Length: 115
Length: 113
Image (cartoon, rainbow over all chains, first blue to last red; front, side, top):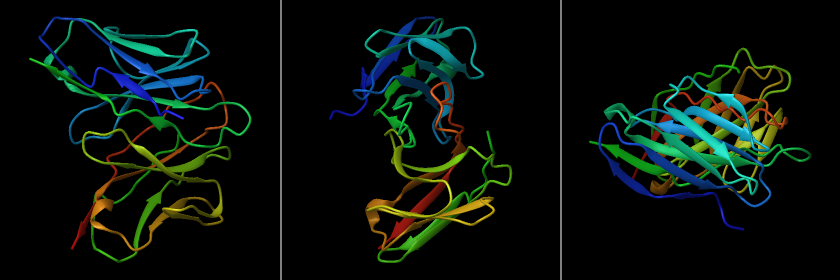
């Protein structure tokens, strides 16, 4: 089975622009989470979606938004980009329900650079 | 979600066994302990997960004492390719509406030849 996939792999934007990042979870996984990882730090939780509904939100401004589609893929949108938004954005999926004792599975990430 | 504490860095040599201990004094009854490995510019990779006693898979062992207030990730006979950041996380993974993971700074393991 394919793992979590993310696109694009790299992205360069300028301040004030908007960006959309995409994630496809592992087949059968209904939960998708987004994380931001700034260089030298651990990933920070942004959002979690389950069954197309937002189930959790981290301490990020309203410029960050996300959605999950019927096929469980997800998009993360960031508006009015700031230099500090430069980071590796990670998507993770996990199986839920019976047998859901395994951890989350992360994609390779999208490296966003804001100039 | 329980807070975890682990060493910032560790050094080892090829062929040695490495043990990384994580403290989680406020672990809840429903919490599992999960360890991830992360290489630079890659997403974290799930290594092992456990609830109590000992869990072993093809890459690592996880030792959890009876009080569950700490855990130890054991990597047998490390190689240079095991140089990475290792994160210990604690949380409830059995519910469909929880999925938030809180990462600390992790332990940077440097394996030397």
